[in-house]
Length: 175
Image (cartoon, rainbow, N blue to C red; front, side, top):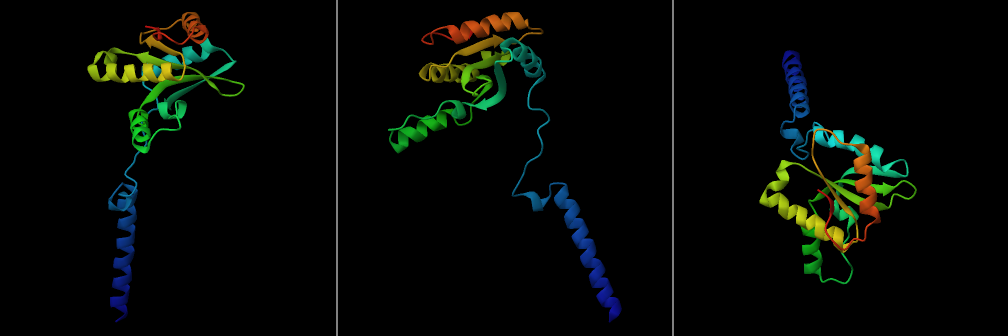
């Protein structure tokens, strides 16, 4: 009888250990949270550009990356539920590559898009057009910078200063 109890306890321990190993490896126990860490937040080109952009905007500004459009542009009050939801859905899964904020109060002063070859596709152009129209609607400068091997902090600073000092009624700055 005691050997049966010992065998049952041993089987139970093996079962618990195997379940823990399977759960740790992303097995059935983790279905509620089917995630794994992303490799990096930025591509190599974005990381390179971020360093230059940080230099270019100076200590009076801070740069944040991958900021949701919906965190920068909120839907106006007074819309019906359907129109409000439609407006929110258009920006819900979009983000700016970078936003530049005043260091003193973190007010957003400029959005920045780093444009590589992928921006020539019809889908990307539609996304870019949406970002431009949102920026125009909220009077936020949009600086478009073509992706390249190397950047001049002085050149980026000139483009940034031109963007934040220009009236925001026309096309985006840069490109």
